Image 1 (cartoon, chains in turn brown, green):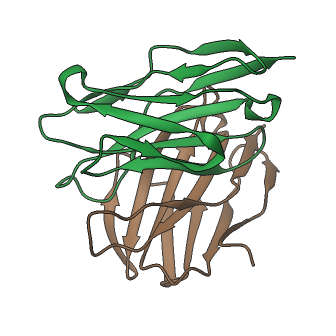
Image 2 (cartoon, helix red, strand yellow):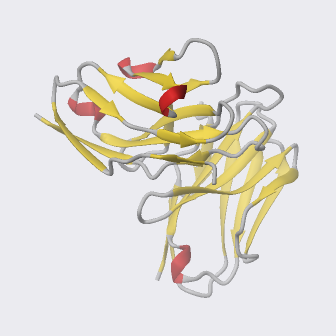
Image 3 (cartoon, each protein chain N blue to C red):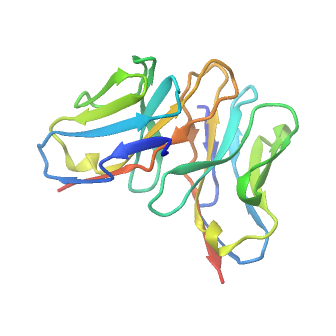
Amino acid sequence: DTAVSQTPKYLVTQMGNDKSIKCEQNLGHDTMYWYKQDSKKFLKIMFSYNNKELIINETVPNRFSPKSPDKAHLNLHINSLELGDSAVYFCASSQTGGPDYEQYFGPGTRLTVT
Amino acid sequence: AQSVTQPDIHITVSEGASLELRCNYSYGATPYLFWYVQSPGQGLQLLLKYFSGDTLVQGIKGFEAEFKRSQSSFNLRKPSVHWSDAAEYFCAWRGPGGGNKLTFGTGTQLKVEL
């Protein structure tokens, strides 16, 4: 009964490849997020979707394209992978509509680009 | 710029000793503040949160935090640390009018000596 799940947990690939990371939440939340954690453990938001609509798009290369087929899923597709894309990517979800909501995080996907 | 600062990159304490992790925020109004913990190789788990009201908030695993407006701080405390508390701790904030995204501090790595 995992709340927020991500696949795969580890992803090793070569520069120039295209890869996807999948995220699913079974909490019934209406908002999902992608965060990137770099090698220094700094966490930064990349995208946020509310009811399948993109609401936050931080300064992220357009090689990164999120897709939300429904409220429970938010996938991240990355084209032409670069060495600097190596990081841990976290998916999160929350139920918005009031001020006191919290975000629940998935276990992360460690992406290594060689 | 609106942010949170965690001044201590690393902290080492002995098991059974008390703990205080510092977090300072920079925001004009009262932000929504959070403490998350990340165990090695794991995702982020919410320890506690502050939105309004009582400035001393209790969280899971015996942690508490105190919001001090005069000092722009939201420090995390635990009276007696256990070896299993060794992890990375992140302070985060979300502005009431700033959309849904969490802005994280740089994290504090806690080591516990047996």
